[in-house]
Length: 212
Image 1 (cartoon, rainbow, N blue to C red):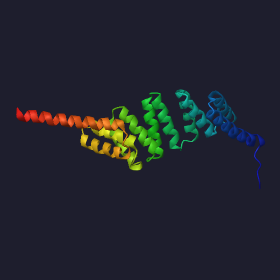
Image 2: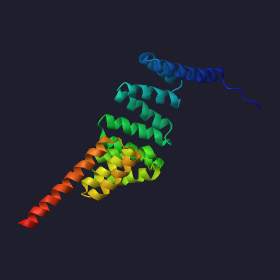
Image 3: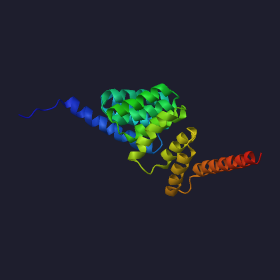
Image 4: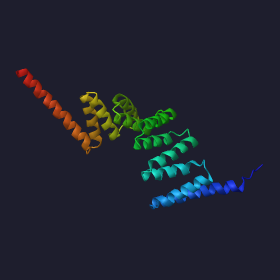
């Protein structure tokens, strides 16, 4: 037996979809205030439609309205708690807000949902590196590079982790591999020059020591 949906619900869903499409078009044309209004109206009609929160949070983040974006991605995480990507986005926003504990917790939540989630591994690795937790950062970045073997930004960070552990040979090997992929990595070239310079200085000091 066919069951007819109540008219109010049917028209409500159509309105929510339409408002989200309108909001995205407005955002693309740079009319951010009107886009926000459209997404907010969609949320009023259906407070548990996930796309509305995602769209609203995304354009707020693009305008550096970080706290507002965080609130909307938190709501999105409650509506779709099984999706790791929501917690990755939340972690990035917390990082931008300098709420590093919340950022770490969000990335860890994403990894509980998907232990091989590449953006969670990468962003958590970057966060830990920035907090000078090099051993933990190294583990996350290495796990990420097992999935994305040619990501030069991750290679750059991994090399620095090894450098801070006084393993310059490993750092050199990683950076040289990164340069094979992208020969224009200026930061990597500078760091390799620094390592080479320190190595030469060390040799000269040893030579002086031998003479003495």
